[in-house]
Amino acid sequence: MTAKRGPAYRVETERLVVRCWSPGDAQRLKDAIDASLDHLREWMPWAYDEPEPLEEKANRLRLFRGRFDLDQDYVYGILFSDEAVVIGGTGLHTRVGEGAREIGYWIRADRVNQGYATEASAALTKVAFEIDGVQRVEIHCSPANKPSAAIPRKLGFTHEATLRRRALVREGLPGDSMLWTLHADEYPNSPASHAPIRAYAACGARLL
Image 1 (cartoon, rainbow, N blue to C red):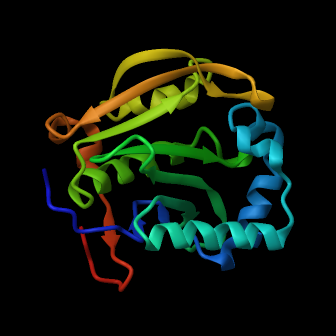
Image 2: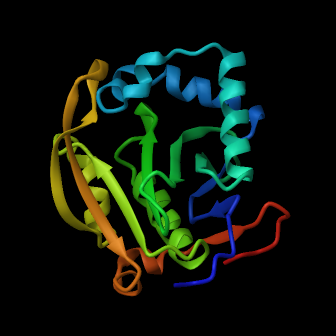
């Protein structure tokens, strides 16, 4: 197991910046979500609580940042390299247990099918194994969400199971969830290991 050197607060890929949220991102995040509600509600239960007032959005980002700083959970924004537009959100979530991370992702409606979720997920897979030193990374998605399920497949994850009625979907109703995993000994031979990234600590020091 690689010694933990993170967390990575900022990750740069070929086209994107994947970084810890700041309260100053609230308006850009709100714009991205509000323009994508029908699209997001298809797969994201939290989207039913939107639209959220700007002040509440800023408070939510403060909470994300606080949990990030305390090493409790790692929620990231996905932005273009100039950071002017929020493309979506992602995370290295700790809810799957010690020594593991779960990657989640969403992309705003007018930016789907351009490979951004795959690019961000490859970057965070690399961060999880090479900086956070985990043993396992998971991705969960609905079997009906074929574009989402294609992402772990492209990155070398294995479909271990489809869990019946384990996830909340539309309006709190239960739905099936696919479980995809990649283990540390499998990672070096995965496409994700070749992702070109630059990763930085909170102080700006280069991590990778």
